[in-house]
Amino acid sequence: MTVPRDPELLIRAFLDEGQTVLPDHVYDVLRSDIDRTRQRVVIGPWRTPDMNSFAKLAIAAAAVVAVALVGINLLPRGSNDVGGPPAPSASSSPSAPASPSASPSASADSWHGGIYDVGRYEATLGGVPFSFTVPAKGWNSFRYTGMLEKGAYPTASYAWIGMPYRDNGVVGTDPCAGKAKYVGGSVDDLATAWTTIPGTEAVGPTDTTIGGIPAKLVVLTIHPDIACAPNQFMLFGPGSNYPNALTSTIRTWAFEKDGIRFNVYSDQAGPNASLAQEIEQIVDSISFE
Amino acid sequence: VIDRDIDRSGKEGRVQRVLVDQAKRGDREAFDALARMAGDRCMAIACRILRDADLAQDAVQAALLTAWRELRTLRDPDRFEPWLHRILTNACYTEARRRKRWSQQIRVLPVEWTYAPDEILTVHDRDQLERAFRRLTLEQRAVLVFHVYLGLPMSEVADRLDIPIGTVKSRLHNATSALRASIDADARTPSSTQERLA
Image (cartoon, rainbow over all chains, first blue to last red; front, side, top):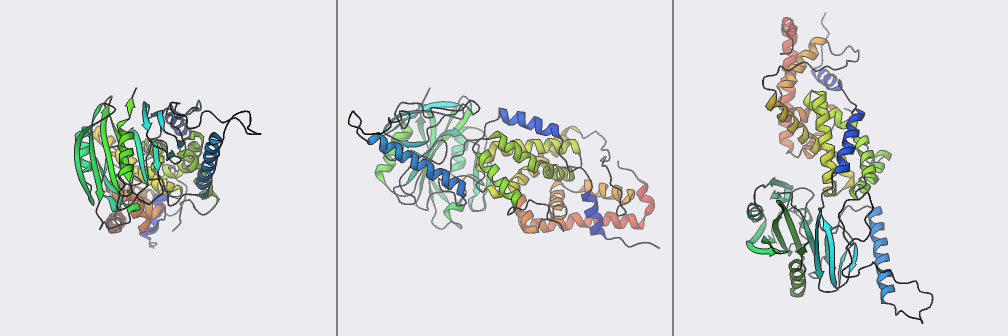
């Protein structure tokens, strides 16, 4: 007599069989690989809807420390000071290395996290050293390496700038769905692809320079009738940049240095002429070693 | 159906969340621990999609390295595993296609699994299912593995593979139909089961 067989059960049993353990040597090779591999620098909107309590605490602590340091710097110094510690010298001092103390195990990138006073700063991102000038007070960097921010989100006074970082060639094809395509080729190809992102209005590509290097600038604005919230409108694929607001003006520059494509990116949440001018001054001031 | 995913609300999920946060800040030790938490599950998935342990190891290694490099693009630490699985699936596709390019002339050998003694599958069942499974597209295999092996609901499979749920349903239907047909054919023509894998 034949015992009836359940095909679903057989298929599940078939899939249940087989290796389920990753051999140790793979972890060893992986460890060696990640020791040699830098994480991609990501420039993103400062707010993270799902920010956890650790991150909130860390940011709050960093803000408190920064405010304290600025306060200490503002205190009058001299023989009349009573009990005040000497003001730290590394904090937000113009012309100082942007990140004064990278740990030996960290990558060679350096970036100053904290408040930026008016002055010139040096930094290294993606292994590329550069310097830039902050023309006015109010800029800071508490959230991401390579990201300068100013103002109160989401008012028109808010903006952020992503300083030079390696482009990954991903350009949105359906930003609300997080879909994107890879664009290889030249800077021109990339900049042209930026103008095709659905749900955006593009001006450009326009010829310009970044640090004396020929670059392309594309200015994007967002259609008011996009089918999702701005924070779900992924301009460059899943997990990428999204507009600060529907009223954002996004400026994105592409240029090539040593055969590698780089971006500079800014998002200004609303119309604000003086802020736009500061963004322009900062980007124009970028200089490579 | 067993949900073999990490219980993200449980202790393992909480530990994973902390490790993801640390690794996003460049902590290689944290990522190493994260990889060891996720590695076996990735290997199980890759082995079942690719039906080749060596290729699966390569795919898992490539996926984990990609995950390290791109980790800062991951917004929600709780979504690490689904995010990793999407990377892994793409790595499996890449490995399989790379293999295909240089193995056109190579005879495909049966997978050398270590079988646990059981009474559900006969040797003939395995052969028939193996043959049928190898005829499935990689995309069909992936849907089958995530839905049947991992026990994920179709909506979660769609999310994890970044495809519409309708596509999940059709791929699942086609895949299970093909596998069922192989079992039915086996039942009808026992002599055919004497064939070995080509």
